[in-house]
Length: 74
Image 1 (tube, one colour):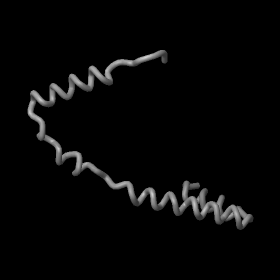
Image 2 (cartoon, rainbow, N blue to C red):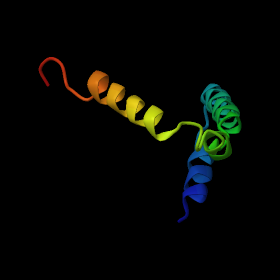
Image 3 (cartoon, rainbow, N blue to C red):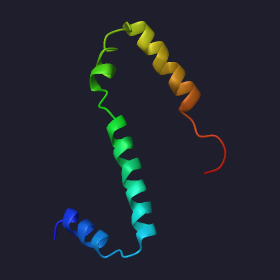
């Protein structure tokens, strides 16, 4: 059985109207959240080539120095 069919089957087995309302509200939240998530590939690629090699190396060094070590006990 496909996932969609299993979900429909599960929803059809719920008799409690309050639970169905909660499920409906949850599905609406999921739909809104999914609609807000848009691919940002083009936005990210718009920054390609904006740093020269020296600036990129300086950024890389800063990131390594600041975030390249683990502090405390793991």
